[in-house]
Image (cartoon, rainbow, N blue to C red; front, side, top):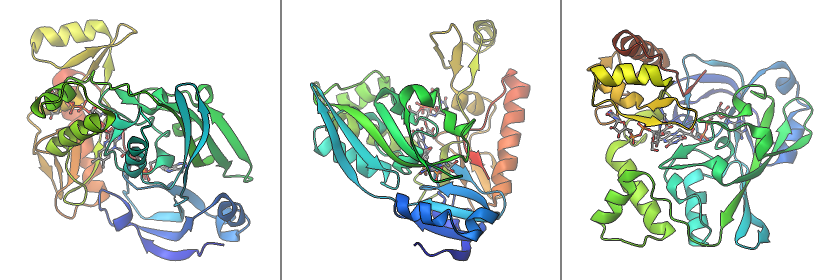
Length: 339
Ligand code: FAD
Ligand code: EPU
């Protein structure tokens, strides 16, 4: 049974690098570990928070309860069909290491998601996505353990209700399940996805015309390193807000007054606006509030510039939301989980 520790500082366990303490803390190495934990009085009597790599959370206060860090490890091939391989990864595997493992084993489909921080277990939570791919595109199923009675349950794609940065685990099943493993359906054949313009530009620079999965991964990593701050250097949680969706009338109205507006047409006739563009065009790039700031290179990212408290970042996010609303009449929504 894993050791439950008391009064643990979570500063090194969240990529914002925010100091916050939890009352109790435990690492879970296996499903059996978790099922034992369920019997503990501390578990039964405490509020609970699951943590993976802490790269999508903002602590605004100490957590009065039990933090459960999922460190379950293991990657295995669990099935093979014509053209595809099913690969199961345990929740505590580091996401980027898993992506590299797949590339090494000539299993294709995750390369566009290279270098996203965090663990495999959190990837379905918000259906992580980048550079033209979301995990729903390669998701087969996941196994999760009920937080109430420890029973295992399998969720297939249709059960997860994946959307843009959305799944059932953020809503109906919030805090109801500990995700233990995720199985992906990966292609044996290379299917390079270069639909995101910047990838082709980067491949061009490298002089590559017929990219392998490894080349696409390399291009994605170069793009990411050029604009996203490294949490080890400056605390952050990636995009702080979602890119907002607006009806076409709103898009047309904004486009008339702001011809350079960056937006993408969606299948439902609505438009997705680049929130980074909106924030930048409110003059907020580099704007600082207490220890927090809007990142200089990517305005969608809020950073812990100088020993910020979680509330400094939260206040800054409210200021950004107000300014964007007052300027463009567009309501931003936070993407990061606020604790
Ligand atoms: P955590 O932050 O630990 O947890 C996130 C949420 O999931 C919490 O609510 C937590 O309770 C829950 N959770 C975690 N593990 C489990 C589990 N096993 N079972 C049940 N619930 C669980 N995201 C993207 O989608 N695309 C990007 O391109 C991207 N780029 C980023 C770049 C940077 C520099 C950073 C810092 C973040 C970026 N992110 C991006 C956000 C983040 O990396 C992802 O959301 C990631 O999946 C979070 O993983 P994590 O393990 O750190 O989750
Ligand atoms: N832009 C600006 N100014 C900025 C930032 C962006 O004008 O400061 C404009 C640029 O014109 C750019 C466009 O916005 O062409 C889109 O920018 P970018 O390609 O950097 O992507 P994004 O929409 O800002 C989204 C995701 C990222 C993901 C990238 C790549 C969301 C909320 N964010 O960012 O995910 O890596 O696309 O696919 O959807 C995350 O979720 O944490 C995250 C980093």
